Length: 65
Image 1 (tube, helix red, strand yellow):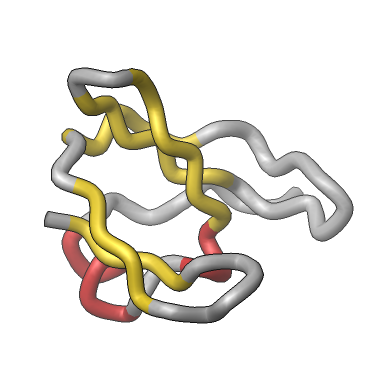
Image 2 (tube, one colour):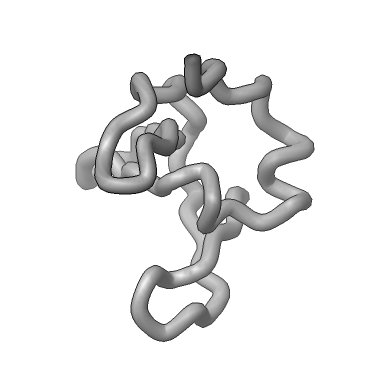
């Protein structure tokens, strides 16, 4: 189970999806997104919203170079 903070409420959320990889850095903050696959689809979570525990379970995100 992976945890992240909700973007608006900052409450802790969970996904049971499997980690599928990282996206290339994108968006206004040029941050990579973690991709989690679950039966209903995919969940994309920016690296800055992942908890420390979740980040420790995942491989390092791509560099922002």
